[in-house]
Image (cartoon, rainbow, N blue to C red; front, top):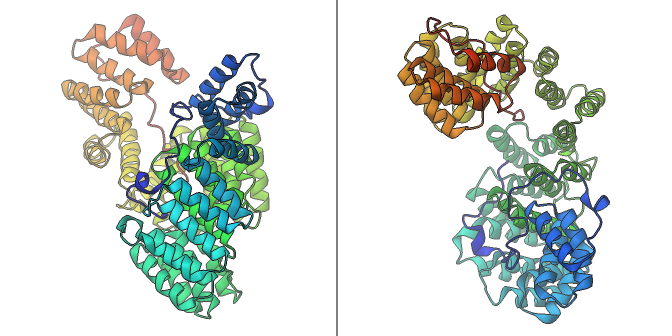
Length: 592
């Protein structure tokens, strides 16, 4: 969803990773369980330090916390160790331990920005507003352009009922154009909180004009207008957003509330909630720039101020999903308030994550129970179909997608994915006569504004034709277009290479398939295809090398049999082409 944007996050954020280069820095090797329940500290300081370091590089903050906790007990005067432990505690959500570590760090180094930043949040939570501002001044090192410290200080003034100074503090950021939307948005929220409606409206309008499709700005501005009896203006804001980002649950819920004549409450009622909103927005920036450590820390601190901030919880769960820590993601999603509009999508995510954890039966049972609770919820039905499809229950998935399509009535462009998924499920369950019309319908609906999605639909339909030796000329044109739309997608380029192969243009096939292998080296289908093309141009040793690579890359069982046969016996050069290759995988994405 569109969110508050910042061109250069490093310019305004504290140096969160000042001395923790090893922590949360390497690709995860999947910590999918709560390690703190199963791990025990090592017997030595060195063992705990090394274990904490390894856990940190795996982004397993629960395990890192276990080992750091014992390590700092054994070596309490080690400042670097304490700083690493502090970051692990923060990222793990162990807030009491994090604040205690921050106190010890700040006592030795009063200018440590992250420690002072964390302690300022704790002070703000306790309504100790002067203390919060003092700590922010120490941590920010006098940088007036520090977005985080400046806006948190403004919220501290707002909490102390000093609206004039709060807005003056916000306006210290006027020289930084990159911060315009954050400045105007939080200035509006502060003005509204302290009762300055005219100033709030001016700033809301400026934030909205800067970016009309930012969810938080639209929602807060519309609620501001609705509170003042300007229901039609509020609805117009929501409708405009809905046209750009269809069917967002928060927008749908707000529009329903207005249409029912019920009041809409402001999103911010306290300075603590305002500061939490700031930290949520900055967490989103970190997440969008793939800086998971920064995102997690901001979101954890924001949730300490406002534990029920539903969007912060969803964003934190999304970060854990990206790190493949699905148990932790589900723990976070389960904390989303039951009455929050985004709770439905959180429930769906829990079911999908159960499948990713290898608990497919639990996933299906969970989503089926959700369907009973919300039988008219298209997203829930679609999620069940997605799990069935991932478990290769293609006939059952097609039936489930049919239920979703019945619920939507007349489809709009946002429903292309349903027809695509049902079409691929029909194709995989050997019901091509039903799958082909769905794939054509998906191609008709998918917007040109989604080039990667359009490339996937073009690719799947055209590849299916090629693999069945149907409509080769039309398929070739479609695949060429798909490559133009997605020039770095190995599966799409593989399909073009396979079309060349079917046409008997083997040198062209080799050229494209070599590109595809470079982009997606471990895919068994692409390696198998390249092996076939090499054989046809007389590069038989290289062909067997590619087939062996395909064999070792976990191909489908039916494909494995054919690959082994080719390794042992080669190919019949009189045959027009290899057959039976698997169709390209449908993209794993949510609907909408």
